[in-house]
Length: 143
Image 1 (tube, rainbow, N blue to C red):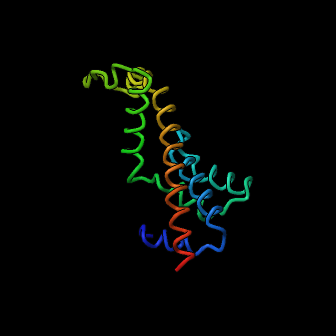
Image 2 (cartoon, rainbow, N blue to C red):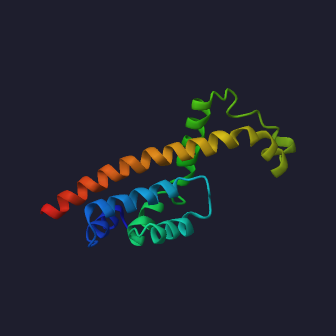
């Protein structure tokens, strides 16, 4: 589904612009959260618990997808590292002795910046998403 089609589908929902915007914002926040692999389940659960629009929430969750998740998570980790004052972001890697355990050990200092960065970026993106979708939903109702 192309972006234009997704937006058209969002604005065809029969909920209020406020509910559409909050559903999308919650989805975006969950989609950018550090809990990789559970985004869809968490999106559906949040929509059900808070009585949001499930369809719009899932569209927000899928802002992060296989094409966007690597750049988003990379930027969020870098952002978190900068805000937390982490100096050594990318360590020198011994490519001759590389293994999963080696990488895990060498990158463990990035766990906190990853969690902090994705959470903060998710919050900022959710706020921006709410404003944009709310304004667009209001305009689409006036046409």
